[in-house]
Amino acid sequence: CRWQRPAWLDEAERVWDAPAVSQRRSGLIPIWRRPWMAIGSDTYSGDLLSRLGIDNVLADSPERYPRFDPADFQSGPELLVLPDEPYRFTEHDGPEVFPDIPYALISGRLMSWYGPAMVEAPAELGRVLGQAG
Image (cartoon, rainbow, N blue to C red; front, side, top):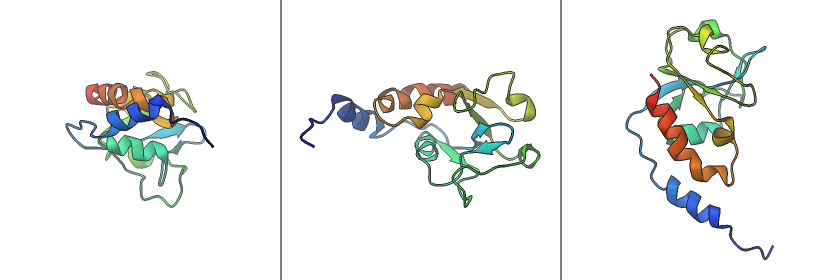
């Protein structure tokens, strides 16, 4: 294409070279409500969160975005990861369905937009995920 390599790409490679993960935790990552849907297998978001220490409990699903019943996950995941897009989960809309699971409210843009957002994603998401629980 004869385009120059964008500067953000070099910076993204640098910050993702070795993101610091202090601990691994199992996580459920809902992305929609009514019906409940989550990150499943073979997704950018799932890979990104794995690099930040979150082992997706639905990573072996045959579907990329499976529907699920919250009753099946009242125990098991160590963390509920709730993005603000495509569904805008908040502290009052989402966590109440999983009362015994710690949660992290995260930026959906940082979790799912590849490109320049990749530069700030490891530090910001790592900070929020690290504080959860």
